[in-house]
Length: 243
Image (cartoon, rainbow, N blue to C red; front, top):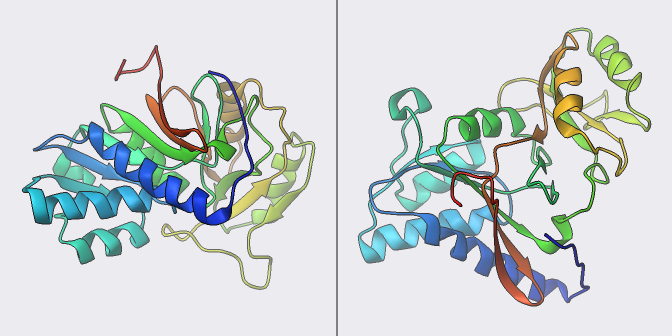
């Protein structure tokens, strides 16, 4: 999977993101139980699912990964269920902040990484919708989000900082920290584009007391629908479940 970045007008990029979000719906089949992701690009997927239900008779149920997605889906008339009621999902469609040649991801820019990972790990397939600025040789240029417990958060931050080469910042700052849908806080960790073994890093970080979840998704993504100036490109993981 090669990496190529091309500058483009913002309006053109947004139009391509919309087209990619719609193209991701090609993976959606009648009767599916869907994980509905979070983010600016996958929002177009949720909108398209709503349109197809209203205009084409598509029948699906969804499990949202955030309150924002839940509200959007409800406004479109997409029936929602809990993960407990749905059981194993057929497919989850979500966004990503970065993805590499091995289909490993950084997620959590929107703060929903814990719910996103729970839903993704409960699915038989995961499709990511992203633009080509998210395609990288090595993960880590985007600060790695880590959800933590607020209790003694500085101690957790110090322990993460011992293995993170760059800054570890509390999202929103101490005066008004960003609060996740779970009541957790987010640390944004500047590892730099040096995360060449994301699985090991994920395991190491999860061993730190106070860490709820890490925004590394390894061995979960099966395909990426990518918006680029050359058009919409669907990359399928040859080792994935949708190959």
